[in-house]
Image (cartoon, rainbow, N blue to C red; front, side, top):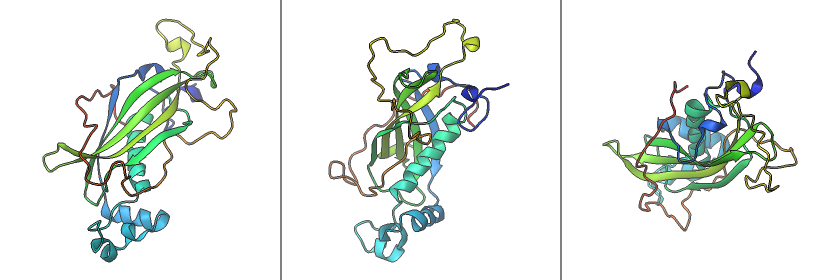
Length: 233
């Protein structure tokens, strides 16, 4: 019988565990195309600001047309993250995010390359049997030639993933994840309250920040991509 710890984020048997998410790993989450009707419908339901829903006003503004709600953009990221990683990984909940930035406007028809980079990983001190992975998610607009033009979204967050079951561990080690120093470098919530939903939540700014205005020079362009083996959900 498959235990909950051995299930992926979508409920199927897990293929990837915490031990597979090694720092330095890059997971290609594919390319998403922004559907204009869906983009506007989302904004009308959840973020009906005029530059997200009013074609005429937006066209006459500095935006030059309707732009996506930041919440819609991060929802596209979340779907790609589920389809291409969480659908195979023994994912638990997420304790939260540290950063969410909209670096350039997103528009209907944009093709966005999505990826996740593993920045750090260590067994959780608050949740035995789980490990905490620190992840950076990136979305980059692609040009007509398919090459990255501009980074439009960046988020840094943490996710909990089940440790590989002892019977599946070829080393036979039984890692408890205890931290002998007593420190809590992962920032896990030791109160066990308020479990978050898997993946990053989001906080809409919709507009570029003063530090990185629209049209800023692209950065964070990937140089290598290493996809974890197996089917892509």
